[in-house]
Every structure is written in structure tokens, then in C-alpha cells.
Amino acid sequence: FGSRTAVFLVGGSSVASTEASMQDFSPLASWQWYAAVDGQQYIFWTCISLNVCFVFSAVILFLGVEAPYGRYNQAESKDKSNVIMRVLSSIDVPAKAAWIIQECPTLLWAAWCFVFADPACRASWGNCLVLLCFVAHYVNRTIIYPLRTRGSKPIPMPVMLMAFAFCFLNGYIQCCSLMRYLSVQAGNLTTVVGIALWATGLYLNLDSDRILRNLRGSGETGYKIPYGGLFEYVSGANFCAEILEWTGFAIATGFSIAGVTFAFCTFCNIGPRAVSHHRWYLQKFENYPKHRKALIPFLL
Image 1 (cartoon, helix red, strand yellow):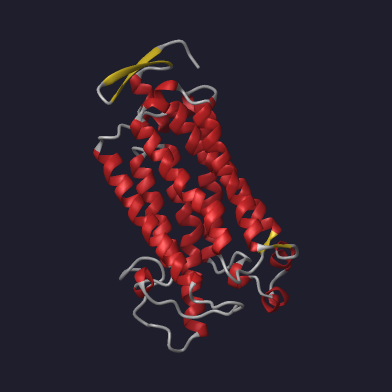
Image 2 (cartoon, rainbow, N blue to C red; image 1 turned 90 degrees about the horizontal axis):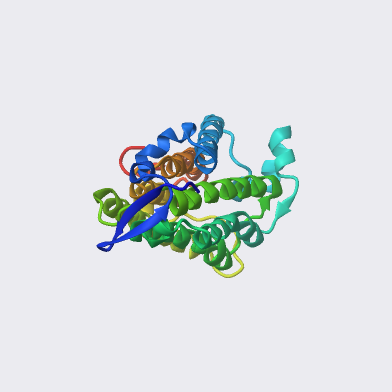
């Protein structure tokens, strides 16, 4: 860290930090980190790289190529798929193990960055609250969700490794930004509104997971039409909820480049999957509700 001093106001008291000026910690200033040095520059170019990769991915997925996991990782589907898809699907990892392995870098980065945080960032209620949102989601995704799943299809190893790579890079940019380079004020409107949207998305996400999990009885592996909650409006209720969750997170970070990157990559990744799910439901079930949309209630 540099030798200049910044003063943060936390709960009415000032906390001195050996870092840059207060203006340098502004979330919107993160969009100019391309001209910064060391950690900030690494975060900026990692964000740009992720955005470019996920735009490319979204184009492929919207053109109809389904990521080969879940319902698209069936034996009959593998036999009919092209060479690329057969290679990606050649080695399967049990779903529970795959979820734990691919999501765990996020929690490791959160712990590491909190322990070695800039004192001012760690003392900021806003920074800690937003980091807690990130950690709460991934405690569920890394530990609770995998252990509660029933009858999930195995995940191809290349897909798991790609998810691991994203979680590693995303965990780095989110946690490092919040614990070293950003100032998030707990009382700011963006923080309050963002966390409220994040909490709404998390609730809908958990509720959607519950509905999907309870569709299957003990020993069952087939698919059924989900009803209730957000599924009354969209086929990809869990995807819609997660996009809402990370959009709220991006707002809570003050529209920092790291937060916006997470929301954008989430949409590019699971938005097309929601469209594929919707098309799959319509083809598989003649009695599928025709009023449901794919991703956004009443619109898309």
C-alpha cells in the first residue's frame, strides 16, 4: 500500500488508513483503474477480460448451444451432440462434489481478503455488509445447496473447471475490491437499495431451489413442471432471482466495476440458460403453462 493517508468516517468516528485519498476509494473511480498501479489495475483488466469472455459465451448460448450439464447432460443427448459437446461431456463429476469444488474459491478469497484487509475498509460497515452479502450467497452455494440436492445429474469436468475458474477470478475481484480499494458507505441510498434488492433476490433464489428440490421424491430423477413462487411467472425462476440478486449487489457496491462485472457476467451466463429451459419445458410438456415467460415476468 502507499504512504498517503485517507480518513474514513465509520459510525461517527474517523479511521486513519495508509492508502490513497478518499476520492481514490470512490466506487465510480474504479472504472479508471486502468491507469492505476498493482492491485487496482489487475482488478480492472480482470473485469474487462471476464466481460469480453462472457459476451462471447452469451452469443454462443443464445444461438442454441446448451452448456452440457443438468438436463442437457443426458446419455442420449451426448450421442446426438457434436464433437465439441461430446468432448466436454466425456468426464462426469458427481454433482455434490462438483458444486463444492467449483464454488469454494469465493469463500477462500473472502477469508483471505478480510484477514489481510486495509484497516479502513475492514472498519467500514458498508464494506463489511456488502462482503457479507457475497459470503452469505456462497455459503449456501458451496455448502448448503450441494448437500441438499437430490437426484442431480453429474457435471462434466470441463464445465466444473470453467466454473471454478470464474469463481476464482470473481472471488478475487469482489473481495479484493471491497477489502482494499473501495469505500462503501452503509447509509448511502445505493447501498440500502442494493442490499434490499440483493435480499429479495436471495429469498426468491432460495425459494426457487426449494420448489425444484421438492419436485422429486426419494430416489426420483425425472423432471416435472414446477409451480409456486416465481415459477408462476417465469420458467427460469432461480435464474431470474440470481440476476436480481447480483444486480442489487452491483448497486450496493456503488456501481463499482467489479460489482457491475459480476451482474453482467451472471446475466450472460444464465440468461440464455433460462431461455433454453423455457424452450425445453414447452417441448417436453404439452400442458406447460403458456402464460409463463422465460426469464423476466411479463416481458421475456
